[in-house]
Image (cartoon, rainbow, N blue to C red):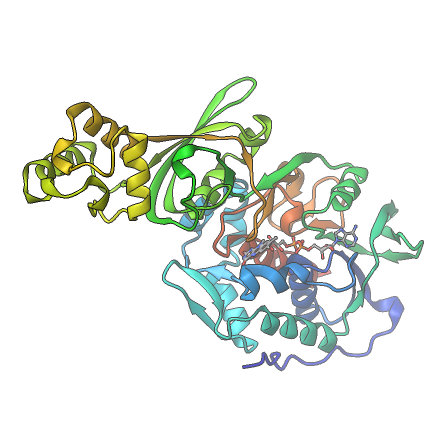
Length: 429
Ligand SMILES: Cc1cc2nc3c(=O)[nH]c(=O)nc-3n(C[C@H](O)[C@H](O)[C@H](O)COP(=O)(O)OP(=O)(O)OC[C@H]3O[C@@H](n4cnc5c(N)ncnc54)[C@H](O)[C@@H]3O)c2cc1C
């Protein structure tokens, strides 16, 4: 189904001089959501989006593998902030005003019907980001929002109460309000710095780990539906430990999947400092205690299964190739009978099942979601409005801020909430 914009009255014709002039730098999720909501609430505003690329909304288009994971089915702001390694306190106040439930209502009211997947991720029912792009473009057109593509902003100068915005093609325009929504962009952070803001050095978050360990060799494609991981990262000044649970996928370069993404997000800054050197300890069977596993193996040794080949055993629903690799890692021969398993080898096997040590040696490129840890310092922004505390009339929304979430629709949600709160602040101007 194609999205149909809400029947909001078209913008009344106003003279240029009477209109509040708003520049939005960055035509991504945060920029568009701010522009559309501001236009809906303040028809007198003249809004211009400056987009560096050939087309806006390119990340929205590729997001969620082209399906666009718009938000997450977590309608409790207190629980919701737990999915954000950075910005929890500030997001609480944003989510109190616009949270996933509002996002769902917002999109559905404008024709994008939503669905929830078993893991809580929420997508357009059509399973296509194209529907979201279509809606955003239709609303931008309806509200007469000007979109300047291929217009990278290289300078913003505060001139009394106005902003002079200059693009790389040397075009200059003046505005009353300026919203910086440049996402993961060095040029955006430079603009913020030039206006007097502190930018915490951006480093990647949400990425797979590179691990070259014999135990994982030839196991690519194998998934563990539920595992637990402990990551120990030795920094220059301190050692930090991060833990997480979730599915894991073995890749040709190491490990990926939600558990790894969570660890990479929580440990983003420490991992960057350690140049992505860390020790990961994997619990392959987190729902079973060490004692229970040992007892189960001893029971198998003594029972009729004892006559089977170790490698043929189907143990605790572990994928068989992984089970065989763990046997070899523990010093057992998969060709031998189960009953031949000695006490020492059995103990090593239990140890590897519960605490498999894997040396992380790098960060693999992410084919899925990817965001930045770092950005404009949150203490310099008033979260009631998202206005800068240093420069009146300047607002920040989206990934340019030092806010980031886990995978699952949390990063877009932070953009929608920010865009909504900015539009509330601008409606009264
Ligand atoms: C492959 C991938 C898949 C993802 N999937 C999901 C998902 O399914 N769900 C989810 O919640 N999150 C997802 N994310 C994260 C999400 O896309 C970002 O959190 C979100 O796009 C941030 O929005 P933004 O508006 O802040 O920045 P962006 O979407 O990056 O938009 C910023 C825009 O500003 C422009 N720009 C930059 N500098 C300038 C300048 N100087 N002048 C003018 N324009 C400029 C850029 O060209 C860009 O278009 C994904 C990310 C990636 C990379």
